[in-house]
Image 1 (cartoon, helix red, strand yellow):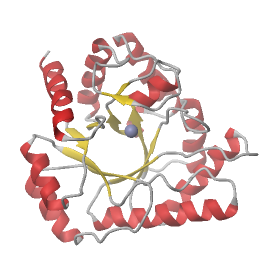
Image 2 (cartoon, helix red, strand yellow; image 1 turned 90 degrees about the vertical axis):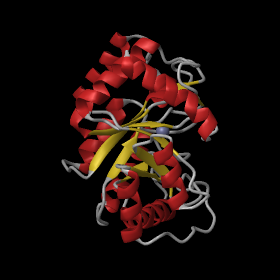
Image 3 (cartoon, rainbow, N blue to C red; image 1 turned 180 degrees about the vertical axis):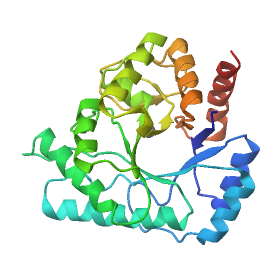
Image 4 (cartoon, rainbow, N blue to C red; image 1 turned 45 degrees about the vertical axis):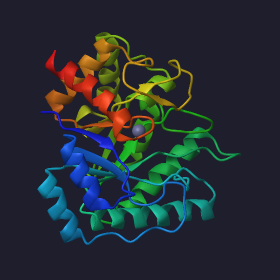
Length: 277
Ligand SMILES: [Zn+2]
């Protein structure tokens, strides 16, 4: 079974966001609980109220994307502590919103630290988050600049360090995967990628897919999403993604550039047409 969702803005308030999501046929959502680049965090509705709104709109799961202004892979003590504090706070905000998962990017290497140190620092951050109730999803990155956690062998290092727990899973971003160097043109490409995830991380740990096309070529390491089938994603690979998501009940989240309803409508149409094929 597939649940289709999208990253949506909550600028108009949570209740309006959920009503509009339901009207456009979205079945799951991803939101930011606060400005992703920093600033004062806003007040949130009560969790009981949120749970009622979510149930009324038949929306689940609710993913909350972590803000970007901290670096969870920081090796510097003060920066590492800051990341643990801000993201720990975000775990509490997910609970307050009756949400299901906090989605976290691994962050980036600081000058003077190697990729492995950065990955280990990130694993430490994830472990620190587990002292707060809730679940964390680690998202693979495009490898832009000094970003870590793009290849599945690198993410395996993090998952191994965190240890066996059902509270930490993977959010697979298809645009980031392509930007890093995994082609997604043919069905074979997709099957190969699933094979790698299975080998390094385990398909059971995948809890959702950010279904995005990439504006820049495979291996470009540039993180720029494109509307579906306008970039480097092939329609055969898209069919494969949908079939696998159906098999494993992976929610599909569109992070359409522009993140507005009009841009998203075209993506939703492509998705629904491909599902009928
Ligand atoms: Zn993403």
